[in-house]
Amino acid sequence: MRIVVNEWEIALLFSDGRYEGTLAPGAHRVGSLFQEVTVRRLARRQWITETNVECASADRFPLRLSLSASCQVTDAKLAFDAAHLVRAKLALAAAAVHAAALAPLEDLVVGREAISAAAAACVEDKVPGCTLAPVQVTSLVLPPEVRRMFTDVERARREGAASLERARAEHAALRALANAARLLRGNPELMNLRLLQAVGTGQKPGTLVLGGSALSPVTPAGAHPDEEAETP
Image (cartoon, rainbow, N blue to C red):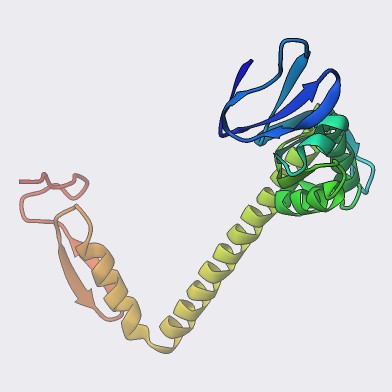
């Protein structure tokens, strides 16, 4: 019997129900006329995913975690005897529950790396003949009512920050007006200069006559006093 083993595989050879050993990558001639030969193939490395594991945070909020890990076979016979794929999924589910219970919900939402590290520590040496690394959190799902609660809290925080910023801007504007009022009170000439500046930026034509401390506009010649002069 001719057997071809790929580079990414580990082949276990059984003859008449007895384990004979593993086959290296390449082509092999195994068995004889009166032997029953069985070959079990294992992937050297593959990704294992456990999705939507029901968990609870340290402050008892419900959530669902999904974890994935790279499963690398180190001892093919031991991994095969232990049904390593099933054991790996069970280990990831237990690690998700354990990692979620270590921190409050807010820390879990913002700290995916911490969950991954805690889960990796939990699955270490839990699957015979295999190593699970790296362990990663692929998703964290919250119930609708918990999501609404987090949304309301974040909205209130943002609205508070916006109100505080508006209050700071108003305070700065009032402080600037108070400083300007003190300057004008101590320097009357500044008031006249400010009036000249305001009139100079206006759109209506006219002539200003400075008399005493007052500024009065003079209507152009030929124009009615109650009518505005037309723009040329």
